[in-house]
Length: 186
Image 1 (cartoon, one colour):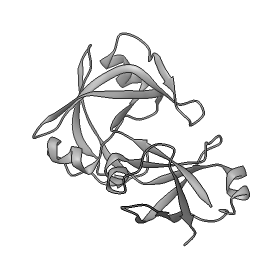
Image 2 (cartoon, rainbow, N blue to C red):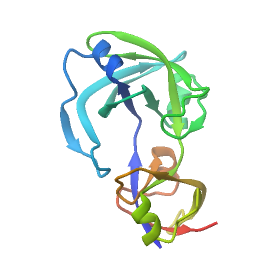
Image 3 (cartoon, rainbow, N blue to C red):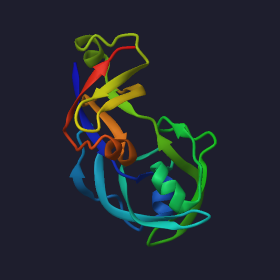
Image 4 (tube, helix red, strand yellow):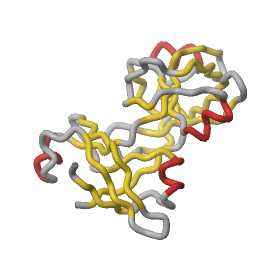
């Protein structure tokens, strides 16, 4: 069984309160994402760590109940942080970062490296025979092929069946958006 690849560059999710502290306006939709109801906004922020900063991170919408910055391990070297690998919304032990918007600056325990995950819902689980599984592995073919383990199955009410990998994972296997890779049930 195959799943299409979605490469997730560093980005920011903001709570409603933090959105108001950083911007004078609501999030404006730049483009819809494949996951239902999700979008990339026109709004950008800078993030600052102990050793450096990254400018122009895109804010994804809609606003969430938490503020989270998703970075790759490569980004961490530039920022001088060592965040945990976590599912979205699990900020236990997250790295402390400053987030700079046009209206203000906030400092939050919000930096994580996102788990590799495949978006599923109940219908997709049944259709793809994934009921009861928490994670799978995936096989990548090609010149720099290999296997990625510990790919979480991320449930939501509505989902587009897609694996999300950060830029480090994607680049290591020379993957691009919409490539197809094979799911291995552990």
